[in-house]
Image (cartoon, rainbow, N blue to C red; front, side, top):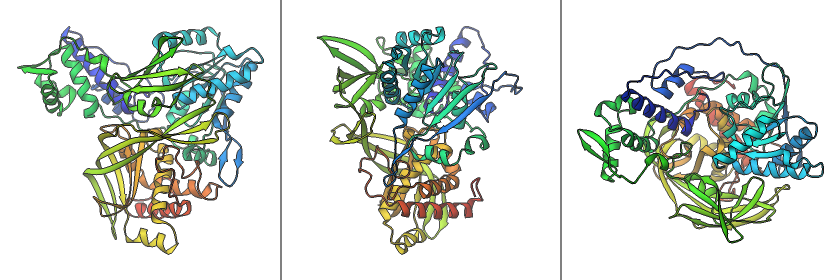
Length: 584
């Protein structure tokens, strides 16, 4: 059950509720057995996941072998800029080294593109030895037939290496692996140990290597390896009543069985309001119960349970006058990964996106021999909808948690050379803006904060902007998220607040609890942010501290030293009002 967090957890909880009501209609009342070795709040997670009380069995009698854990920081290439050698290349070379020695290995990555890049690099390194076919990629978006074939080859021992996203983290017994390589910290201590547990099962010894990215959280762990063993596993949080997610499942539930008014016990108190919204669009009608209307629409086919957004986009390859379906991608990711001009990687092959059809929800790609990859760049604006919690720290400083309205837009993409990571420039894009409500936190600066920066000769906007980037980078240490699940905006003067401010918000419509988790540990996040910036050896800011490759403002302005000063000051003021945290 530790896999069911965030968006995926919210969807799965609703699928289980739908399963329960259909089973009950046939007179069945199934028992659920939930398993995990890496959850600190198992009772709470099991109850949220199934909607039922559980009995906890906490005895651990599992056999386990020893593990050699390595924290692997790529070498510094440029001390001035803080640039390190590509973690993708380091992980690929380590994989190739292990495969040549007949050591069965899995490499976990954080993103689809990263999985494909590492696969390609490793195959290139193994081609001369005739072992390039012994390594394959495995990720979400592959068609089911492709995934089953890869799983079989891995289980049968025909593959010596697989490069996977979290899609291979769950439910597949691929035993017999000797090594796990993680290309980037997976965002949670529990995920680190779950992935580490893929090798050395039973009593076999195993190798576990974490290859650090240039991001702030990875570099923080390289400086603080004790964090991985001293910190306990995190509490899991997810919200099945997220309206963007629940609405789709109510449509599915009505299709499966008419919905009774008393089923608010199952779906929550917002169910009637959401059903009325669905009714206004012609999907359901009420005649004592809520009935599904369209005879030609299967609602479950329109939902991706790993996304908040709607029906998925298909990715179609055109070659030699023929079209082949490569895979699918959720709507929210389509603008970032298959925009016109994007490089799309699939099974180690490179494709150029020629067209993104927003009406047909289809991306048209063509094979290419391009030696670069692309990164989308976006901008966003935030307006406050409602403050759920507001703490006045005095002299104008305020800490707030609540609902925000986000307007985000992909405005361009950056090209980077494969292997060397050389920046090849930015290309503009014209894609529609996305508007959605979500959960967020914000810090409104007061007289002390602005006065501190002014007295030190630091740039206000540059300090706020750099603090925003650095806080997003380090926040996954305390919130159950990936850096890409979190958005941020900084203002020299925010209209709703009438003050300089920094916003952090959930990057999923409706929110999935990320901002709340950060708010609960905000002092620790700010203190770690200051320490991470201070210890970075670069001169004026780099990807390891205050730069963010997805920044639509081109990482300008940024004031590294002002951000460190401000973060440390804010951490002290937070602890003055909320008590000391774990890092002071």
